[in-house]
Length: 310
Picture 1 (cartoon, helix red, strand yellow):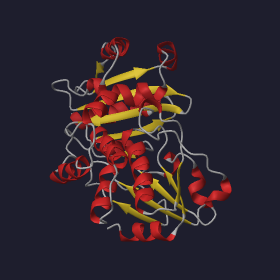
Picture 2 (tube, one colour; picture 1 turned 180 degrees about the vertical axis):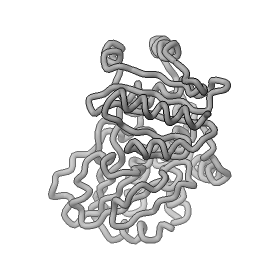
Picture 3 (cartoon, one colour; picture 1 turned 90 degrees about the horizontal axis):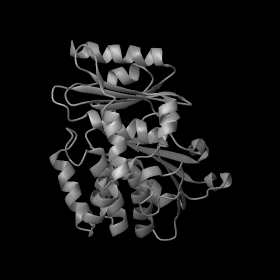
Picture 4 (cartoon, helix red, strand yellow; picture 1 turned 60 degrees about the vertical axis):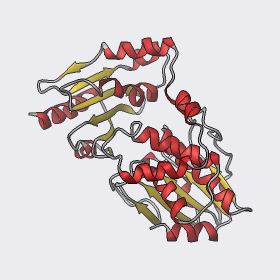
């Protein structure tokens, strides 16, 4: 499965690792985890990570990205992680590398790189990198293991989502053997101060329902600004407040931004990915997203989601 990737890593002395914009735990975890996996097993390689700021995941060790001049891509291998579409990649200079390789666990949307390993049976891209490490017999440091475990935990919803399989726990066990401090990790991931709890309550009070019980929140740009939160923290960060409401099988969080309206769609039962794709997005069967141009289009998406429940 990963023979070609291992061959390319051995071949190239310069490697740049990319991931998607607005990184989550899986994007950063796979990026940092793979970087250190390569450095630990192939001394002498020059491996760098690129992309936008880590945001709420800045607590992760090595989450600050490297400086990479354009000429570094000459005779380099670019590895793109956890990204279903080309427009989502943070830093498009991967196109200028001598060779590009993508590893991704989303439903296939388009070919991006010269070579690709795409497998949606994995709960996370971090799970794929952990599998690569195990099957290739690579030694695993605590830093690599912790980074990869972070992505497995966050993308599986703490091992609650349907994407969690026996393979997930096998790979989690493999990572745990490297000595991960789970208490520290979960504290960084989920502990909140009281102000954050109060902010989340504000979003709970905004929840509305369609005719067939699709839950949704609509956040205006002004509301986001007044809260002093990043657009990403509102869109991706608050979609989960609707996730445990009895009788709600589909929920969506709309957030106005400069680029358009971010639409984060989730479901506990239905495959909502085709709706995301219809509106220019993508993702997984039960967790997808898209960016639409205006509120009118967002409401058309909501209507389509409601129709799935009719």
